[in-house]
Amino acid sequence: MAIMSVVATAVMSVAIQTLRTTNTVTDRRDVFNDGRVALDQMSTQIRQGESIDTTSTSQTLRFSGYLDGTAATIVWRATGSAAPYSLERSTNGGTTYVTMLESLGSQDIFTYTLHDGVTDQVTIAMELTTSTSTVDLTTDIYLRNANS
Image (cartoon, rainbow, N blue to C red; front, top):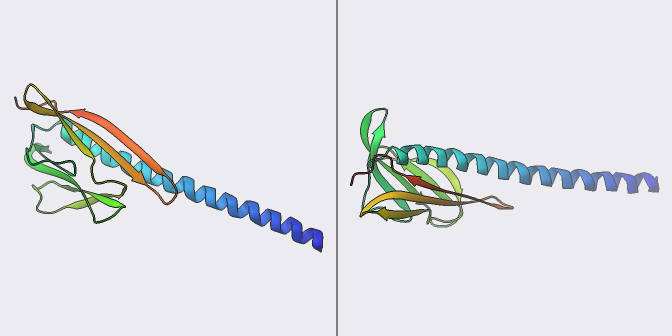
């Protein structure tokens, strides 16, 4: 009976550790996937944009572009009072927003670069957090249709 107790304790210990590891990997995978989808959507929309609004900040990106062939003012913003922050998107100039992601570790995700006096490059650096780890996603996006 004592030997069975030791074996059962060892098996339970391994099972609990495996469950914790599985949860950690699953959380990280889900957050990474959500971040990648949001980053892909932002990249596509920004690349097709015409101009970055001068009111854009490190927390808010506002630009003119097209959605399904129709001119639109698109706004992406990081919001919240404490981490994890949310990433939201508006396709009607900021009237209504849809939450795209809820795991940002920082609200400061946008950086802008000018070339020949025109903001035609946006760097997006998102720090995504889970209960056990952090995933960093970064990309540089150049507007193909930037107005000069």
